[in-house]
Structures are given as C-alpha cells and as structure tokens.
Image 1 (cartoon, chains in turn purple, red):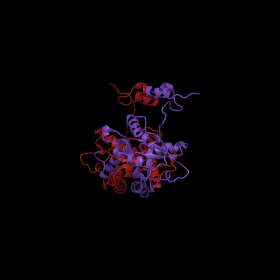
Image 2: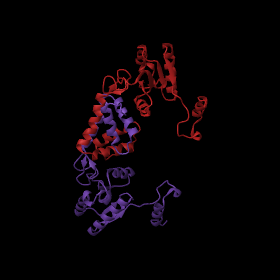
Image 3: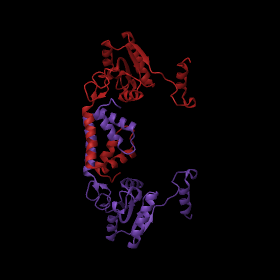
Image 4: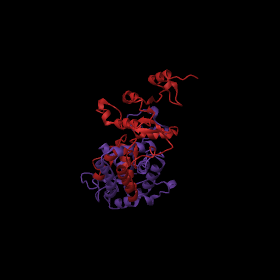
Length: 199
Length: 199
C-alpha cells in the first residue's frame, strides 16, 4: 500500500482497528467512504461522535442509553422483580429479540477473568448488590455465556447473592432449537441429558 | 432493537449502510465505538472526514490521491509507456502488491453496464483517450475482471484504441496458482486450455 495517500491509509487503519474487520474489508470500507457525497460522509462521521458523546450507561442497569435511566428500567409495564444479569449490551438486544422476557436487566460490562486481570471490582457488581439491597428484586437470572469466564462469574455472583435471600437461577443449556444431535458437542449433549425434562 | 437509544441506532444504521456489513456486525462495531476513549472516537470520526475531503482523483490516472498527481504517475522510475486499465482503485492496490508491475495505471471507476445504466460516458474513457493522444503510451493492458461487464468494457476499449496505433493486451486467465484443477470451473479450465503455453 506504499503508494496510497496518507489520509486514505489512516482511514483504512481506523477501520482495520475495529473488531473483526481485516485489512481487506477495511480497505473496501474506506474506498466506499470516498464514493459517498460530502453530506453522507459527514452523517457517518457525526454519528460516531454523537453516539460516543450521548450514549452513557443507565444509572440503574448500566445498559447503553441516551437518558439518565434507560427505557427498559423506566418502563412500568415490565417486571422489576426479575433481573437478568448479562455480560454486555449485545446480550440485552438478544433477549429483547425473543419478545418473551418482561423483566429488567443488569449489564456487567465484562466477565471475571483473572488471566485478563479482570476482577469483580472492574465489573458493575457492587451496583447489582445495591439494587438487590433496595428490596424489590426477587429473582436474579444468570445469563452469562457458557464459557469458563461466564460460568465462573455466574458462580461467583450466585455465592454472593444467595445469602441476600433472592432466588438465583441460571439459563438452561442444551441442544439448540432446529439443530441436530449429530452436530452437538459432548458438553452440550451432556448438559442436555443432565437437564432433561419429564414429558 | 426498539429499546435502543436514537444515537446508537443511528450509528448502527450508518455501519450497516457500508458494503458487506450486516446488521449484526454493524451492532458489534457500534458497541465497540462506545468503548473507545473520546480521543479515539474523534480520531475515527476525523479520519472519515479527512479522507473524504482530501482524497481526490489523480489528474492523470484517476486513482485516489491527496496530491494533484498521484505518486505512481509522478514516479519517473516507472515505465510511462505502459498503462494498465483497471475498474477501480482496489485493483491498483492488488497490482502494486505483486511488485512486478512497473508501468502506470488508468482507473475507469466502473465498467460499462447497460443494465445499470452505465455507459462509456460515465467512465474515465475520454481521459484515457487523451492520455494516449499525448503519444507516450505504447501499450494498454486491459485488466478488468473476467466478468460480462469486464469483458465488454475491455472489448469496447480495444476497438476504440487499436485504430490509435497502440498495442492493446488483455490479462491472461487460467488456473489460479496453488489451486487444484478439480475445483476450477469449466470456463476457467477452457481459458487455461485455450491459452496453453509450449514448454
């Protein structure tokens, strides 16, 4: 890319610094930006700054929002006695997509991971405890991923929360709907067997 | 995504409007932007505007550059008698990566495609003709893709350029290096057979 102009190289590098965007895709995106009108490019550029400046963590659940308290936490039609604890904001989007969950959330913004130097203090765990301290919450659903860090965080929180007298539950793991037994790994199959339901 | 804040939704939409970026990836990228520092976000945002404002088409070859004449066209060490005609700036990057091409380029910024309403007038074809009119160019290599539009454009240009007394050549098509005959489609195999070289 030795012959490329500096502003273009810089834009390609910026795109390449995004997660999951390789060199080739970054180049494609940068070239696409050059084909936009001045106004379209400005809209894109402004959207980045605007989102970055206006989006903060909700005071209650720490999900991304442009208000002090997010729409979910301020929705009185939702069940504020059930809290679903998730790793990050993407998981909230995933649960909302099911349209079947009517409780509220608590976004940890990470998982406990000693290898990466992330301990409980770097996550929004104190804030979860103080929410439970307010007395309205009756059930906490651990909805972290079934990874080592996800399990560890769920176990850690469970031990912390149980003494506070709230019900603590964990998402069910098993064969994904629409999938095939043949393709399920042994841990998933084991979980599906262990958590079998009577018919 | 009904519960998402407007600036976040707007940023997700902006990313989703980029080519090859789906809804899920757009969301992931937007969430990543939120985790950046204010300064990093500004760098990204500025890179978009700066590239868009400073990068123009080279006066000679129409490749992207931040100077009036690009580094390739102003490099006296290159062979200015050979011009490689490509569809867009990405193709220049691809040729430069081979480190084996020492001529110059001409970027058409598209291909003739009647279905999409793109005729010769929308491409930088007049500019190629006037370059040839200057007399220095001796060979024009048609390096458009082996697609219907690429072939049609190469054929159109060939008919236009031959009467001007320049040599017109076309990239060789055949089995890609490192590939397997088994996986080659019939057209590629036919081209490889047709263009076979004596050993």
